[in-house]
Length: 104
Image (cartoon, rainbow, N blue to C red; front, side):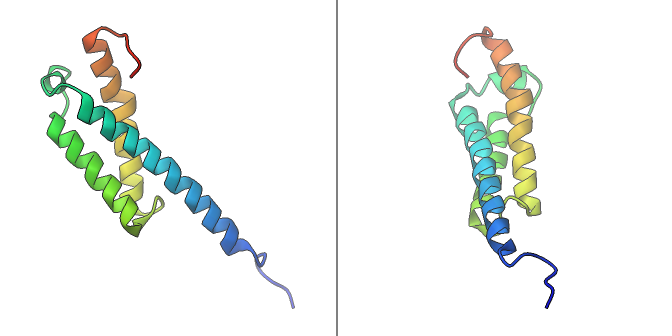
């Protein structure tokens, strides 16, 4: 009897999805914490969504990722994209606006 896939493929898929879930939650969590700790008047100064908009987007995506949709679902992928856009674009703009120094 020949098998099309190894018997343990479900275990491998589970581990890969768990790693992706942890990665997604770290990205979204760091972006959410950073958005919460920034000044509200800095967001319009760099020409992006207001602080409340970013917090809402990141929080909703993080909750949907946690509720079982997972990192491979549409909501998980949108959440990862939103977190990465915030971290790679908005965070850099906010850092440059202040003074370019600091831990964040």
